[in-house]
Length: 197
Image (cartoon, rainbow, N blue to C red; front, top):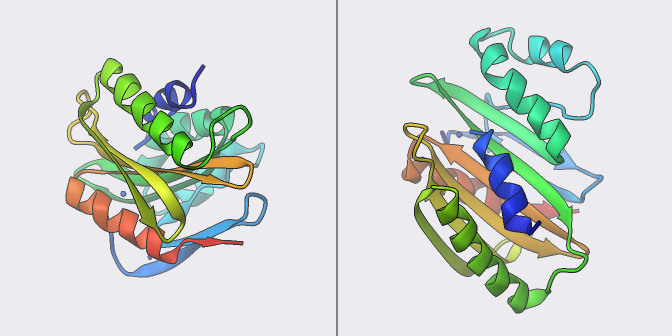
């Protein structure tokens, strides 16, 4: 299964607004850190007691427990390394996730970006995503592919993803909000604060 086909399944189960910087995300195992708006909550994905973690994280807004329970279980199962969610907006909980996979067997450098670009366009169009657009550009985290699309059966859900090759891994940063403007603002915040450890 290709990198994009694997990730299409992950994105379907996941779903962020921007604000003042404040929540520092640091993952020393995979060697990165970045900052999100204040009041965003990171859900630990390495604990056995998912229900306890959710109860603690959602004590201020109990609606989150039902919404996030299946998403968090899916994230743990599917290898997402970071899962952070923001405040509800019209019943929608925006989020940021980071998926990390090995780059073994993949092309590297510019050929990796062009190959991933083609895979994204095909896989996401076949999955029924709308308004699929991609671009290869340089950001603070390096040379990246940015993919933007909309999930047609979730109204509204806009997604932007950064695919970046780093050392022996591919990191996929996904931002999901209720508007493309929010996606872009949040993605800029993540990129400007991103640091390889």
